[in-house]
Amino acid sequence: MARHLRIPGLVAALAVMLILVPGPGATQPAATASARNATGARGMAASAHPVASRAALAILQQGGNAVDAAVAAAFVVGVVEPDASGLGGGGGMLIRLASGKAVYINYYGQSPTDIARAAYDDAKDNKSAKAVLVPGNVGGLSRALKDYGTLPLATVLGPAIRAADEGFVVDQTLGQIILDNVAVVQSHPNTAAAFLRDGFPLQEGDTLRQPALAAVLKAIAKGGPRAFYEGPVAEAMVADIAKAGGVLSIEDLRTYEPIVSEPVTSSYRGYQILSSPLPHSGSTVIEALNILENADLRARGHYSTSVEAFHLMAEAMRRAYADRVAFIADPRFEDVPGAGLLSKDYAKSRFAEIDMAKVVPADYRKTPAGDPTKFVPARGTAGHSDDPMTAGHTTQISIIDAAGNVVSLTQTLGTFFGSGVTAAGVLYNNGVNNFAVIDRRNRLEPGKQPRSSISPSVLVKDGRPFIVLGSPGANRIISTVVTLIVNVVDYGLTAEQANASPRFLCQKADPVLSLESRFSDDVMEGMKKKGHTLKLYGDFDLFFGGSQIILVDPVTKMYHGSADPRRGGTAMGY
Image 1 (cartoon, helix red, strand yellow):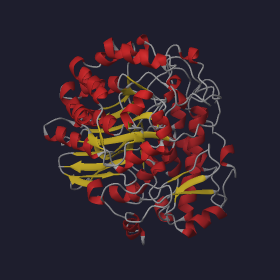
Image 2: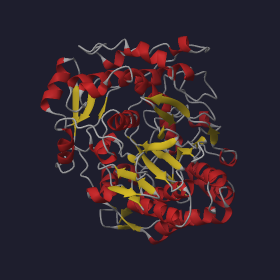
Image 3: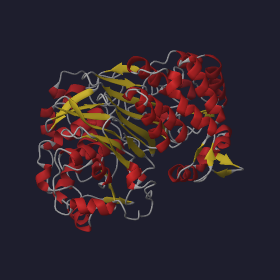
């Protein structure tokens, strides 16, 4: 690393954090620190599963570029982490080439054309076929490979096909998630057939084979993405979803296209930031950082040991979250003041509202939105609603190759096991759940994408990639990505130390500040005195996501990868 700040007691404390026994509700780190972290000179892959990381690394070692490796890993992780992503889901991929060119491929799902006929009821239909969006994974990953990869689709699909055909050993994380969500798994016969044995959930150490999914992957390898969106596979999927009460149509599948655009960009303390554009939440990540840039965090001490730093970060984040709820939506349908949300001057106005002595307003849920329209010409007024607090489950992949091409990719099924509906071997998302019933901007409409928290991001210094990162975790994604960047840029931590640092969530939609239990008693008491209401989670809790980080040392040019200790991920380099 270019620099490492020696904050008294912090580095030693972080080392201890890695071996603490998690508290109630926590996920025990599923791999050793040496397996979760890696160093390489020519390539690095970090994902939520070792099979996916191994596939990506093999592609890099065989001469593929970062996009080839990311697409291979994304297809694999949809097999080995079936609760989090897969062919029936969607996501977003941020690509920054060594030339400096950057592109964002939005392959999130969009609502079916006939969605009104589903009469979706958020109170009872969010785990059903009515919640299924048109899936984008196959279209988006194939588009990325076609435009920026170097290898054939059949080649990069090989590892995923083998994992589905031959099977893989269920790890602790997946075994626990199946058990925790057994009601969803049991809700559809095809899903139950995949993840139950003799009526009992698969457990850690069992082998999971998915021959029906393998058949679909083989069809895509042979016929390209059209083999998924048209023909026998598409017809079977539509028929099965219709039987389950959904409204997905052949025309919805046939006409689906990913959205290719530029990432949103800004700066933070001299580093260029690239992140996910609307309706994804890169703008919220940038707004939070813009607010924090008005203060010297380093001088206040690390947020895990300093009440002042922690309070400042919490208050900045909930203002950014309030603006997200008020403004962010699908820009094809709504007029969003995007430039205003990214404005440094607007961030200064939000920073000026923070009272360092106490929580203002005292009730997080009454945090007002700002007015970014003053900082950019825009039409219309802000909508408002509470953002649904879902137990979202997603996955992140971070890749860098020898040339310096990077990919940060986040994809999802929505919540754990998505809709619970498996059709023609494919487990489908429940993305309709991400629309808000009372939110004018984020209301459900045909062909529309819901607002999403996914924020794959890249930081660049002097024209070279410095950090490649992202995280799953529904609305915790934003706070996790911001915290990771602060840990590295402000506090000089390594990738491993940044990933090990305690996490928290402070947002408009919750009446409490959620945090891991590793904050000191003094800090927690200090936060309470300022008016925060705390909700404690385990030491390393899966609630706060599973980030994948790659840091590039600007001096040695070495790659340092870290997979989140909260999840069964692995970083691999060479």
